[in-house]
Length: 87
Length: 141
Image 1 (cartoon, rainbow over the protein chains, first blue to last red):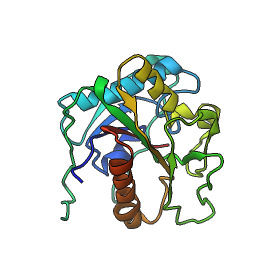
Image 2: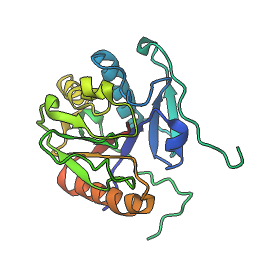
Image 3: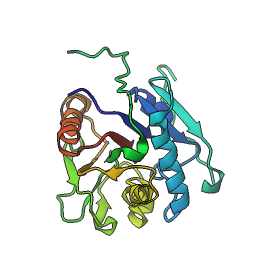
Image 4: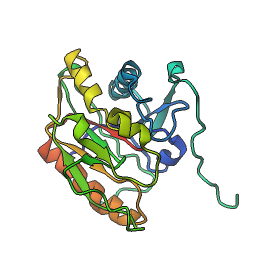
């Protein structure tokens, strides 16, 4: 097995980064359970998926998470944070 | 071979998207309605995974996962498992095709080592050998 290219869509970028994904897209402000957007927002869902797949062909740094804003998503949410030791 | 804890296991993508076949793997607890649901009664989590065929009717997919709010996915599974969206991108020629196999598993587990060294490797092997995918899109809940 020589490996297979992957791209992650994450709404918890700090948490996901702990697993060192090779490529990742964070659609800024999307809540957990809305990785591609809200129900029925098909054009937004297509944009997010095109952007994620596009990272495969871009010269991203291994382990880098790319943040993209999608204003049409509407209300924004804070992603969960990783608890630092002693906090 | 043991991979360094600091290493990012990066596989280059050296194809054109418009000629590439794409698979979906989700940790969002997605499965077919007629498949065994994930075991949410076990506090340790469920280490299994479910294969989802490429021609699945998205109305036949559901979520069993008790560690995220999935009412939006219950309305439109594409918010965590974008199979209809992938079909749109195939129709418009953005990608070449849809892989022969897709995977749903329940990302929550207290058995991290077994998930990382067991389930994740089984899924990778399954996708590598059985899906003919050139690349994989991963989603969480």
